[in-house]
Amino acid sequence: RIVKWDITQEEETKYQEWMSVPEVMWTIGQLATLDDWGTTLAWVGDNMSGPKRFIVEAALAGSIIICSLGIVNIIIGSMCQTSTVVAAKQHVLQNAENLRSQQEAASVLRNC
Figure 1 (spheres, rainbow, N blue to C red):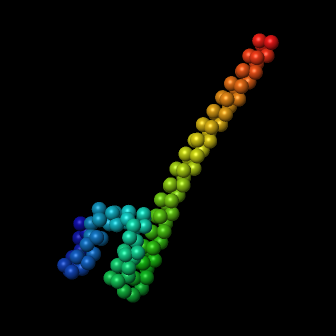
Figure 2 (figure 1 turned 135 degrees about the vertical axis):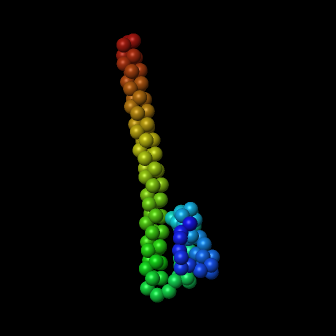
């Protein structure tokens, strides 16, 4: 739990989802997967004012974008890795098929 001596009970209920590390991690995880990100940004905008509001909204939006692109990058990377492995296996199978057909041809020539 975050220790704040100057926070009131009303502010504590208003900022409830940002008051403990597990809750913050869960909220940031939801934002990174774009789960209800608009509501969170609107909540930040409604509960802050002045230049601090713009800075926090810009930082939060930037974090959401970077985290989302990172997740997409991981997904695309795993898809590329899988396709590379499949292509390598296909290449080995094609080489084995070519070798088998060459051995059959050599066997036919020996028997003539």
